[in-house]
Image (cartoon, rainbow, N blue to C red; front, side, top):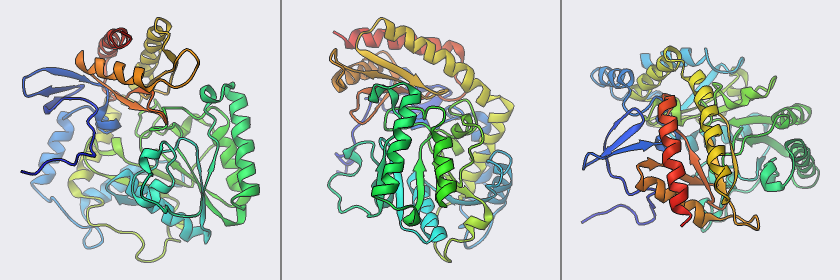
Amino acid sequence: MSQLSPALKQATPVVAVRGEGLHLYDADGRRHLDFTSGVGVTSTGHCHPKVVEAVREQAGRLIHGQYTTVLHDQLLTLTERLGEVLPSGLDSLFYATAGTEAVEAALRLARHATGRQNVIVFEGAFHGRTMGAASLTTAGTRFRAGIGPLMPGVAVAPFPAAFRLGLSEDEAVAHALRGLDEVLATVSAPAETAAMFIEPVLGEGGYVPAPPGFLAGLRERADRHGILLVVDEVQTGFGRTGRFWAHQYEEGVRPDVLITAKGLASGFPLSAIAAPAELMGRAWPGSQGGTYGGNPVACAAALATLDVLREERLVENAAEQGARLLAGLRAVAAEAPGIADVRGLGLMAASEFCRPDGTPDPEAARRAQQAAAEHGLLLLLCGIHLNTVRMIPALVVTAEQIDEGLELWAKAVAAGGR
């Protein structure tokens, strides 16, 4: 009898048989409030009717059309529609299936386009599990240990994680930019640096938003040295943070390459990189492709997702409900000494658990996360020490569901503390 790999560790004991909106239902009919969204994927909630209908209709017409063999209408329409929401000038798209695959494509493009080998990433970053992407990942040794040697040419610079550094946000930004300048002076010469890869909000690294001024500092250095700025919006994009793209909180910052996935197609495997056509044209012939990228059914789901985001004003809802969620989490933390920090942006919110001496407390975080599951609230851990509990509800979440989640969280924190 075959079974799942024992290396796969389940965050919750739930075996889901049905999903609707913010809820998953198990075989016993128990309802679970899902604040994981499949790790930020089901942006329009589980089985949104418009997404379901678009998928059904497309599956009856064309399930697969390999896009270096034939083009199809859904791919062409999605490319046109994404031009309406992408940053100005990023007018050329390459499609893949998973975020890690898109990161690999962006890495390949950066090296081809610049003729340079080195890449700079930042402490706490998660860019994927495939070999190139894992080489860029510093969110924990669990993502990269035991598979070396990893890809060479990667340098790591500080991320302005103010809480971890014990600094104000302004001080953290100054510290991180000084550290980046030192990396450019000591490890990766600008003339050999192809790109900087950055998450506007650290994902697996602990849900840490980049403070104001940091992305602008990266943009200035990228322009000064001819380095590409690659913004990884796999988890932060498509309205998750209350702006369509999280980097838009930093005025005047435009990526050279933008990576998107997760919420792009409401649960269907689709990812993409976007860049100016001139830059994308520097990719070497044959370097871009893939069997399943730009799948017609996934593209139909992405088109329906764009419609739902606009019609239901879900980006605005993410900002509004995200503020409600963060305020509620801070109220819970005020009564829970084990929660040392609450942070986030939009519907990317996190509570970090520490011991009285300030050291990370992954055991307390795990107890609270498991107690939440027992109460019917599904959550995930993150952070380099796995001492942070994150909340990623779908963008369709209501104020009532936020309040229900906060009530269950308060009970879980109290139960986990015993």
